[in-house]
Structure formats: structure tokens, C-alpha cells
Amino acid sequence: MSQTYIVVDQAKDWSAFLPSDRVITFTQYLNLAATKSQGRTRIINLCKSSKYLSDGYYCSLLAESRGHHVMPSVRVLNDLSKKDLYELEISQWLPLLAKKLAKPEAPMEMKFHCVFGKTIHPEMKEFARKLFESFPSPVLEVTLKFRKEWQVTALSLRHKVN
Image (cartoon, rainbow, N blue to C red; front, top):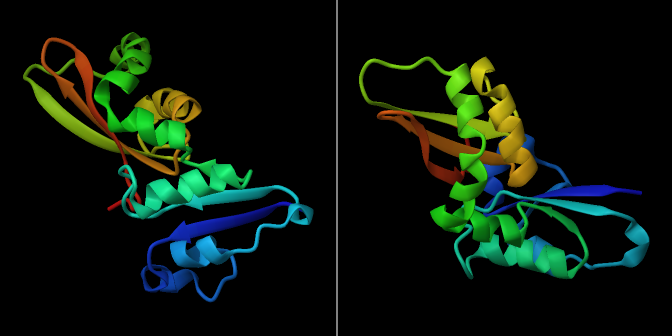
């Protein structure tokens, strides 16, 4: 039987979803007994920080070492920590994105959120799906800038959408 846990920093931040045995703190996840008979275990890591050696980073690292399917993975955390690592992947989709977005008359910047590969912006739908396929994460914040052409200037993990 498959199990899914949502790992957060503090349970009080998720009080609207509690009580639940599926929303657990990072400390509870550390103490979770790992048994092979449980079947597939999924971990959705919503810890606030994903920087190297933070609780969020360690949560993904521990999940992988336990054989759990974790989102985001350590590979994704590392790829998103350096612009050079994700810029090459994204650059191939920019022509597709440019066709969908209007060409503004003046330089501009826009941000949007990609939640499990979905977005509320119809023109960004395919781009959000491709981002999720390459960088599977619960929530990504994408910053686009237009000068002479559209560019992705930032791609980062977010753990809540404003």
C-alpha cells in the first residue's frame, strides 16, 4: 500500500489541515520508523529552506536514502541552487514561450507560480508542465524578464503561494 507524507517545519503552520497523520514535521519524519512492508512511500518536502545542510535539504537526502520517492529530490535542489544548471535546460523552451507571450513595447518583469506543473496562466501552461517534468517540485516561482526577448531570470522553490 502506498503512503504519502507532507513534511513541514512546524505543524502550527498547517493547522488548517490538522489533525492528520499525513502532515508531519521534519522531526517526526526523522523519527519515523522505516519498514519495508509499508510499500511505496512518497514524501512531499515543504520545509521552508532547501539550502545545503538545511532541514529541507536533509529531509530530501534522508528520504532518498530510505528509498522513499521524494519531491523535490536532492538533484532538483542542487540544480535549482545554481542558475547555470537550470538555464541550459530552460533555454530550449524559450522560443515556445516567446510564441505564447505578447511582445511588450517596453522592458518588463513578471513572476508566476507553477504548482505541481500547473499554473493559472493559460499561456504558461505548457511551459509549467515542462518545468515540472525537468524539475519536479511542489511549487516553483518563475521570474521572466523581457528586454529584447523573454528570459528566465530566476527559478526557485516556494513553499506557499501568496
